[in-house]
Structures are given as structure tokens and as C-alpha cells.
Image (cartoon, rainbow, N blue to C red; front, side):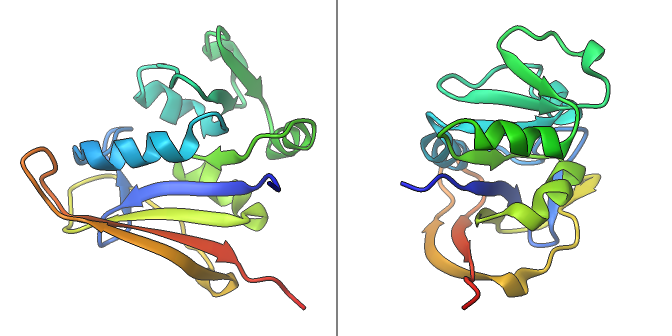
Length: 169
């Protein structure tokens, strides 16, 4: 397997990805998909996203925090890096996929490097304060898609689409 840099996120129909540093919906099936997709890999996120998770480490994944203020983070169990270049250097030295998990400025910083995208589109529009940044979709093509219906535990239907970067000949 060739390791990859992969953006993974969930958004509503208007591109909303967050409210008060958290997800604006509760979808256990989507969380299960995220867990299965990222297990035994590495995650990179910004400090604000990490704070929004109550600084909780996700089991079975290596956590990298990209921050210009490393002294504000308890370093137990995480790797703190101060620039996207430092993250890319770290990536070159190991054999895991690197999942970029937010927030918006972190997604934007790694946009030139994505090999794949895993996008969950939640049916509906929600209130919130953070949208996925502008993105050039022309360099990617969909390769897989799965739709999940709303049910007793998942208040909204959602579709997960995986895209890969179109290789230049």
C-alpha cells in the first residue's frame, strides 16, 4: 500500500463543517465510518479542533497537532508540529496514511498535497460558524460512494464519497 495524505470531513448541504468548534449534528454511523477509515493511521488537526474534542485522543490513531502555540497543549500522547512543512517531513519518515481532520485553515494548508478526499455530505442545512474553505474540485474524481438513511440514532441521512486525485499523464 502506498501511503497517502487524505482530507476527511463532514459537511451539510451548504458546506458547513462546525459550530462552536464541534460538529453541528449527531450521527453515530458517520462516527463509526470515521473510526473504521482512520483506525491505525495518523490524524493531523489544529489546536482549536483538538480543543473542540476536549483534547481527547482517539484510540488506535497517532495524533499530530499543528499549532503556532505549542505551549498551550498538553503534549501527552500527541506530536506537536509548528508548520505544514514539519508535518510533511514527519509524514515522509513513517508508513501511515495521514488524515487531515480540520479545522478549515488546516484543510486549506494541506490542499495542495491531498491524494484522496473522504467527504460526508449530511442532508439538510444546520446553524454554525465554520465552512469548508474554497476548494478546486477539478483535480479529483469520485471513486466510491455510500449512502446511509436516517434512523432512530441518526437524525439525518448522509452520503460518504471518496475522491482520488486525477493523475496527470
